[in-house]
Image (cartoon, rainbow, N blue to C red; front, side, top):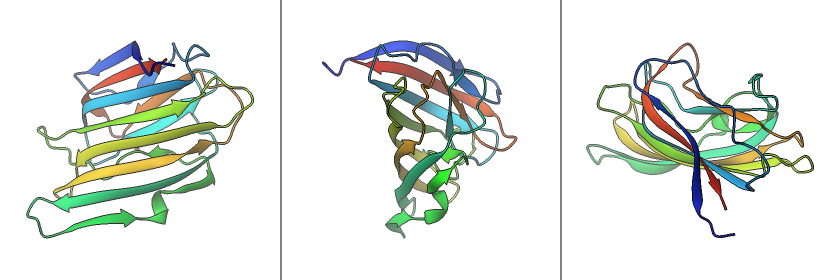
Length: 181
């Protein structure tokens, strides 16, 4: 395994859309897939969320267990910390998984990050993932968000969806799917 990234597909958002879906290219070719996003901006102060699908069309949620924490530093330098909040964790839950927190929605704001998904096509293993992202939050701070966990299913994944949550839309951003081999 060389660790080389092979671009499988991309989606460039230039006007409002409710979701970005990757519905092809996720198979047993690679043991690791990476989703990268840059310049993500939503219509409200929402988060980047990820939902897998086992059939390419039903994104209703799969049971997962995760942990979530972030480091932050305010623009005026008055506060810096590492924060852990159990409200963002999931314990055998079908609730959507946030990969960021409280994004600022100004036209000059944006978020960037990456999710590593391991063995999504396995029919004998649960699906582990790790994520790291950086954003400008509504609290005017720089946030470095870490998420890790697993989807508790041995059914193969065939698609992934990104969306901001609620009724907000993705107003701009670049999304890329890579295979790691």
